[in-house]
Image (tube, rainbow, N blue to C red; front, side):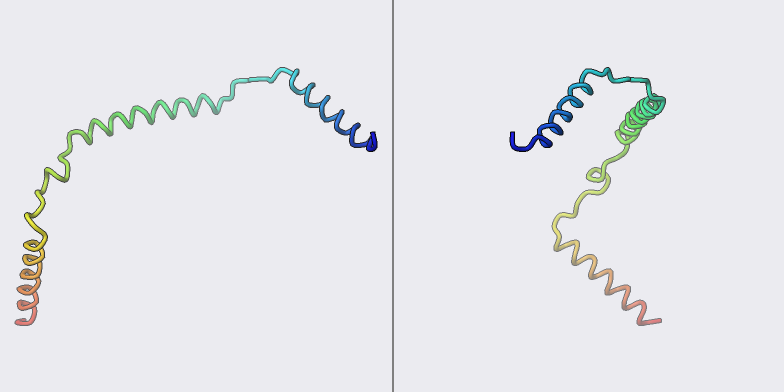
Length: 91
């Protein structure tokens, strides 16, 4: 035992740890926990309502069919832009 101070501090730490383990932990009901549980239940019902609402909506892939090929869409956009530019030049 070359270092009696280290052994003494270690013994106190072990005793403190063992005493803390034996003490019962007070589990008082926290009023904030009840409030959080209530909010969680409320949000769950909102999620269910939202899913029900969104289930009735028309999805994007059904609302507007995709163009046959990107080249035809590009050509249509460029034609529209050219006609708009020509109209602006005439004024």
